[in-house]
Length: 382
Image (tube, rainbow, N blue to C red):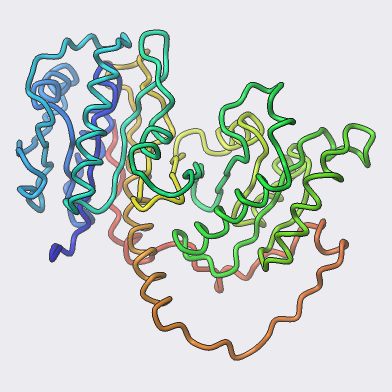
């Protein structure tokens, strides 16, 4: 595509939730159109209903095909035009399916090269609508090799999980040396390619309290996690640990790392949401498509009340555009790489491997796309 602005597809989410409110508020500031060309995948009727209830005065241009999207406009692509009952604040099977219809159309359009990156508004798994979650749904429909990896991000904090949404009693039996190594490799590759960190440093968390306390509280650290870390080091991946969760996050030592690898859901999500309650983004690494989502649910309890904070949606948009540029830079650099002019001398002893590394000189870190950062507008206020 010749268009220099990144084309960003944004799906409407559960139509009884806060999806449209997040989208309309995110694009209330005209400066954001200098960064990207948005295409909402949804329904003009439902969008109009939300705008009338919220009294936001949103202006959008209705299109029938993504190729019709215009720069400087909030384009709304008509995924369907049939009537869908909107009951703001009430999850229903119809409202959840309406959200997934938008995702289906977006995936089909991506295969035709009609947009660059995808941001999904929230759809919840609930008593009225059961599904596996948008991350897994998109993975299943992208027909790619292997699974994606959900990476929760907020500024320089990035957390990934070895296991996915398992009951706690199944976690220990699901964690193996192989699963840790495979997940860490995928996280390392994403940090290099998507976040443009040349030599990522990854903290690996323990599974038992106090990192097993030398075997008194469990032997998984000695039998599984440390051997996995050793193998990662042999593969030139800067992995450290295993660290006790309370110590790493409670002391602020997580700030010394580019990525955190947690063993299970609560271990990663609880500290992440405590540290970044309003600005989190869920990024699905390892897929051909760049897909992000605001780290919020459909928030039915505030739907239609004009109380939703657009910050997570804005951050999801910014991150998607940054990653798209980073991938392009990384891939172009890989075509004709410069030869290495020196060999690094490493200390692979246990003393180094299980200690907190020294903090980097911030001047040498390549964490953000500065050009995109300069273009980001101020966040609109509710």
